[in-house]
Amino acid sequence: MNRPKVLILHNLDEQAMAYIAEHCEIVAFPLGQKSDQAALYELVQDVEGMLQAGVRIDDDLLAQARKLKIVANYSVGYNNFDTDAMKARGVLGTNTPHVLDDTVADLVLALMLAAARRVPELDRRMKAGEWDPHLKGEAAFGIDMHHATLGIIGMGRIGEAIAKRAKFGFDMNIVYSNRSRKPGMEQVYDARYLSLEDLLREADFVVLMTPLTPQTERMIRKEHFAMMKRTAVFVNASRGQTVDEQALIEALRDGTIYAAGLDVFEKEPIDPANPLLALPNAVTVPHIGAATHKTRADMAMMAARNLVAGVTGQTPPDVVPELR
Image (cartoon, rainbow, N blue to C red; front, side, top):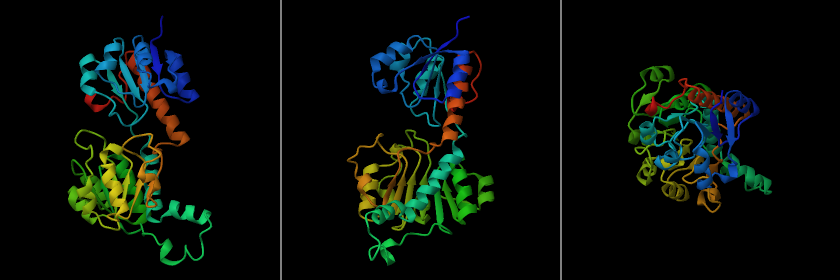
């Protein structure tokens, strides 16, 4: 019996690859050729499944992939899916939710602390030989995180994991803005539900954790930074396009807000000339929210199981809501 043919567009660990190989014939596409659209379109003509991260799944690709049954994303985000086009052609799409929640929440707390206490900036200055007198007194002062007010925009699973760490680890006061209220979470974390505008005015730390949708694209703009305290720390670990990046740069440059911690950017990889990389009050890391060995291995196996289920006539466990 012929095994279903699947296209792998992402590096996976041995365990995940072995699991897929048990059930499928694997076609691997060299990662350096992802931008070679013609070669990609030729390969998708003969596969029933794809495992990937970031390639746009739209009418153009689907027109070439007439045997395709499933696209398994190796990520929690799926804004690369044109869900209308996929639904019209009966193609399933899956993601890897839940498994990375705690790992991303850990990074958010690290960004909050690093930005508030100026850890990267002071590390660079110390290694450059600055200590006395430049790093004494107020020249090295930062902002306390303990007992401060944390505002979370987007109170999903990761948002709640952040609230848990902030409340019970740092005695922070929690306020949040979300599409709907979470009464159970409010009780557990003594959290208050606020409008976006009220949250921005009240919070000492603002964390953006919304998915990227047409409604959330550039949802934080110049007028929103103007609402924040001048001592506010802004953290974005959602998607770079949820923020007007130029407005953020200006807010950091002119002191509208105190600092920012960023794991995501409007264009990735980020342009080396991007002003954010030169700002001492911007802590920047290269989209590493889920980048630990264990979490990435767990994500790979989850994506592999979704892929195999989709090409063997089973219902994958992690079909995205729009395609269920």
